[in-house]
Length: 114
Image 1 (cartoon, rainbow, N blue to C red):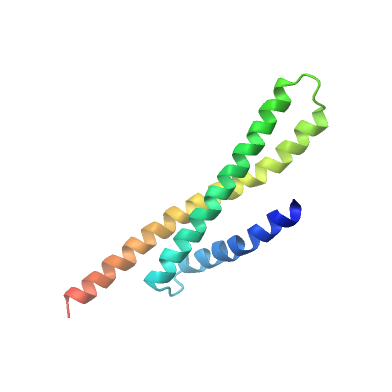
Image 2: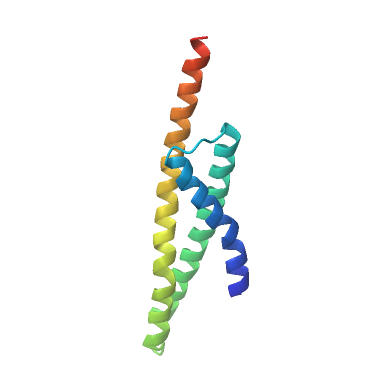
């Protein structure tokens, strides 16, 4: 299962890194912005699903009084980085959407003034 996670994460990591570059004013086309938003949205949905599954496991462990504390701690160690990554990804998506609106407005202004 870990290989699946890693394999699924590699393109997402590259997309998130490119997203950061674009937010630091790296040039990007409209098509690339749309593609980045789509990829980041997919990664956000993946992270949301992983966080929800982990939280469900935590609830089940908490409901079972025989659950070992070590198992609960391991699940908490698993979910916390996912939550941080989810929040970061959501923040980057919001910033990219704002940047895309600004770029579209600038493009429209340039087109109107020609």
